[in-house]
Amino acid sequence: MTKPYFCLVLLLLANLWFYNQGRSQPVSAEFDLKKYRKQIRKTRRKKNKEFKKSDHSPIPQKARKKFRKLAYYPVNADYRVTAEVELTPDTEFFEMTTSDGKVKQYRQYALLRFTLKGQQLKLPIYRSRALMRIPKYRHYLFVPFTDLTNGETTYGAGRYMELYLKPNHTKTIVLDFNTAYNPYCAYSTAYSCPIPPQANHLAIKIEAGEKQFTKSK
Image 1: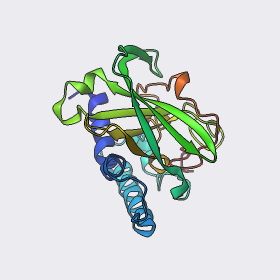
Image 2: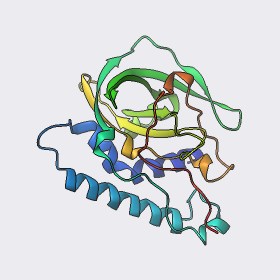
Image 3: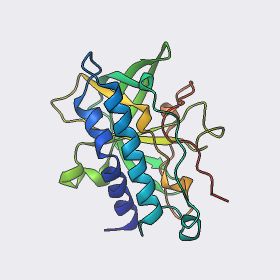
Image 4: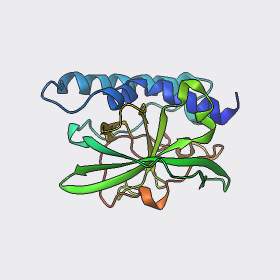
């Protein structure tokens, strides 16, 4: 397995609970806010541990010695929204530019429509040509985005989320910005990270999820 694929698999495993939330749980009266916050904090602690100790951590080894934890916004359920799913089956694959000038093949799978902070927003989601060939990840969807916090409190080039959306689950899905995380490029220039397309810019501050990474002094 190549380095980029291995890193992506690590991200999928580290955020598995988040993906299950997006795949199967609508916002409802049965939503357990206390349990939700507890689980997110638990998952964040696990990720901190992996980034500190794993040989495959994206944080350079020298910086890892002083690394303590990633920075996050407080968990805020207001950023967990129900999005309408508009499938876009006729779209073709295109080249998404990466941070090192290379390209990766993606196809827009659907358009998500949702309301956040009183604003009606939309966000395209994508399928990776490479991951479509791996049975385990054939329902994996890539959700890159930029917003008005970039370069201030969050990574300047945007952040990512993932979803799993099976063909028979096409009406609504939970989109949880508390799960937003930094590309590996936020920690090291050794990685090639897709740059969110202009269509994935949200003209709003998404004050949820992972913040800008700063090296410990």
